[in-house]
Length: 424
Image (cartoon, rainbow, N blue to C red; front, top):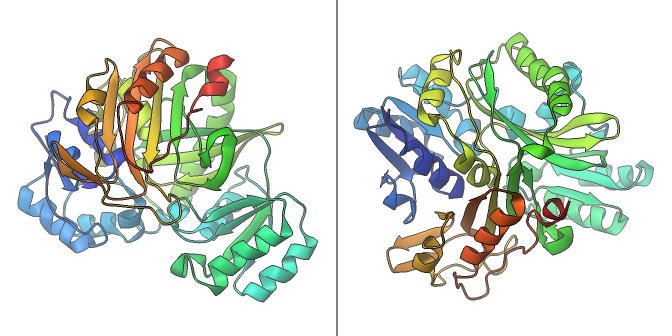
């Protein structure tokens, strides 16, 4: 197989790293990739928002399968463009990708198919309308910008002032662009979060190892929301009875609903869940692998990921056997100074070679440029340091030992990824 991976972050680096291990894979390209990814695949230039250029590239390279990492190309219809050109791609079409591209679309889909989720106070197109609605909600409140905001378009708050400020940022100042022109208020759910991710051919599915993300920027779940600061993956967070409930009340109804609504879905589907006293409820859908969940989960995969992706894209996952290595996977995000606000870039990264020498650790590049001994920050989330271990405590030790070898002036990372579960 010859495979093209679209994207250039930590998730795509982990995907490329895993795909390259497959005996069925002859060649892997990544577009645009980054300096770290270049060690595991051939990187080629691409604007991921240009779906026609992506199709041209796949045709020119003669790839057998294209796998899309980030959400933006999916929302822009890359799968539809590839289908028109007779090119094989793993990922949903533009309509189905609205499950992630529009919070309002997603909520209406869940309501229409009786999928458990948070209740909605309202959807607002005008700032004044939203300000007025704040007088009649229960606190805490969840406010969501409708469109794609790289994980930063959600606020959970018990403060009317903070809620007002968020609405102003989204709807008046236009901080999120068109994505913030419409906002939704919904009830805040209480419980622990769980990332449940599947690979589906539209009917059948296989699930990825369960994972738990840490969204807040700083230790003890403090600071603003981010795209994710670290993840741990252990089987204990998904007891058999809980998984049975998730499949029966959420996964199957979602796949059935997509088919009923005429949306063919072949690809990864991420269920961001809250485990409430009333059972699991959907916080959000993502139409691709989670990031940084991928960096903690794929090192645990003990099966041919490339073969599974190809069969899903062909519409038949039957016969795929999935195994996961026992123990734990952990990943820690190292972020630039200023992230998630205005991240500082162009800062030299030192210690990568020392980190790579830590037994059991893998360093995935997310926002970097350059290669070899000269590597610099080029984004908010810079590196994702992953580790496997016999248990969560040992995996954490390895990950943080490797993190400690890396030096980036002003950078920050959370020191408590998986700490509560490891103590338990």
